[in-house]
Length: 205
Image (cartoon, rainbow, N blue to C red):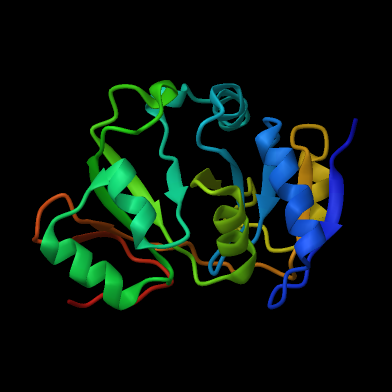
């Protein structure tokens, strides 16, 4: 069956529609959704088969991925990553926002991602993903939707994403046009805080 194309208000997500997304994720579904940067593909962090489905779409093995975890707030993070006091202070100051923090992996990283020494943590400043992970009760694994187009690296129109992925995912959320620039990636495995990809967020500490 083709995916469902689900319009959700970007500023005031309808609770009934968010619950529909939650049920899909709990059943092992894949969802394309907006963030404060580019559109992304995600699944429940605890569903190994769903993680493997995302890996197949990306053409990689789950263990060799660059997936990040979307969290609702900083309280989620300690379960999945080791955060120094300095990193916590920086993250508390600038999150939610267009940043991905690379941290040392914690003890609760899912087995399907075994042997990962680091994880990427995102708390996007966007009501739809924040509401999804809040209602789900745990993070979702996520990866950016990329385009094969040489002109535009990230697709912005959810209708075009639906046409492309409707037979590979379960829900495509239309939360309006997405951005063109991905998140800024910061290596916070040490307190030197190295920016390893310049993106939408301007980082200083």
